[in-house]
Image 1 (cartoon, rainbow, N blue to C red):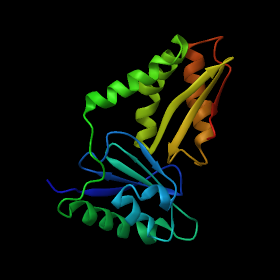
Image 2 (cartoon, rainbow, N blue to C red; image 1 turned 30 degrees about the horizontal axis):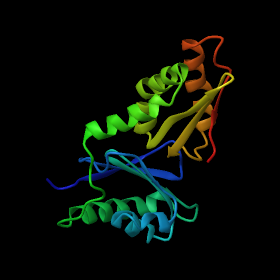
Image 3 (cartoon, rainbow, N blue to C red; image 1 turned 90 degrees about the vertical axis):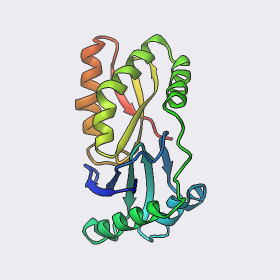
Length: 192
């Protein structure tokens, strides 16, 4: 089956989401430099466009961050066609896709290091928040919970999005405070 790609805008004006009819990767991959892109032929090829600032690849989409020098109206169609053509060349694969069980095992191992409260918070993020964030071309995961402060990692379209602080406070923080009154004081974005 050939790859089919369509472009979808995100709340972050610097990021466009390119969605595939097939799974591209089993794990999230964030690529912020050409050096990081060298592991993946498609990422390297996309970074050859002079306006590319970063890529976030997750499941069946690639969230591409551009610089301010170009408008999406001028480049989105060109990128969509380029990605489609690249993926449909015989023998081209983004990454060896791992089985769902391997991905689930990795998530379970990460959660073993969480406290009981962190596991509860991570489960709520996974069930209620992550699907909405991924639909906008982003990714969220729990980093830690200490002294009432929930620290989350934001990637893809969420990273640098003007509305991410609003999402953190009015969406995520209010949901967690509702679920865990008296325990959650604040939700912050973890800066790597």
